[in-house]
Image (cartoon, rainbow, N blue to C red; front, side, top):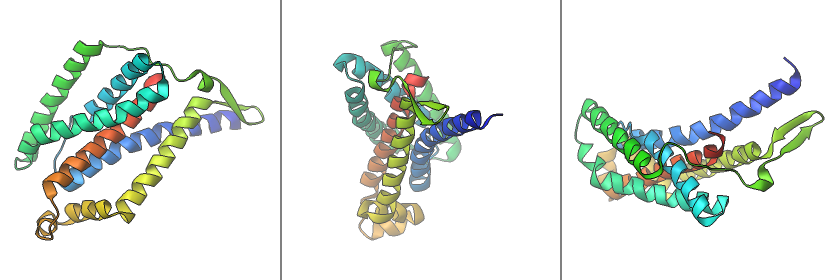
Amino acid sequence: MSWILYLEQSLNGLQFGLMLFLLASGLTLVFGIMDMINLAHGALYMVGAFLAAWLAQLTQSFWLGVLLAIPLTALFGMLMESSLLRTLYARDHMSQVLATFSLMLIINEATRMIWGTDLSFMPPAALSGPVELLPGLYYPSYRLVIIAVGLVIAGLLYLAVTRTRMGAWVRAGASNREMAMAMGIHIQRLFTLVFGLGAALCAVAGAMLGPLM
């Protein structure tokens, strides 16, 4: 294996791994704080991707479609949490698995009914070409943007969890829910916000990977 091929595959792994990190971090927040197994979490990734593709076609702007899809997916996730998933918190994990698996199937079929099974979604023309990183090493510029976006969001998420008041609430809720409630933290509102954040992270991953998949 040549060093160029090795570097290319390393960058591909970094790019895909960062997007998986966004998916996993949202799922980890939901399970760590709410103690709920949500198999429908991946469906939010799909919703974010299709929303971004549809809005990009509607606005004729890739970046505007992505930026609009993120808050809309977060809103969809918060509505889903406050109307359906909230009833599952007191249930055992097996009930949560069965209920959220059913919800995943419903969202999949609803997405297929609205947008079909495929929707054209192309990256901006300015990012369609390769960039020469090293002599002989050309790498797609759009994949470099995905890596940059993933690193920036990972850094911001770390700062939000470790350095902000909401991050302290999140850590308190994950550590001891009853004590957090006794200290005055509105735990239901926190759950909804955390679920919205997880949905937004799904939307970022889905919107950025959509043109590649």
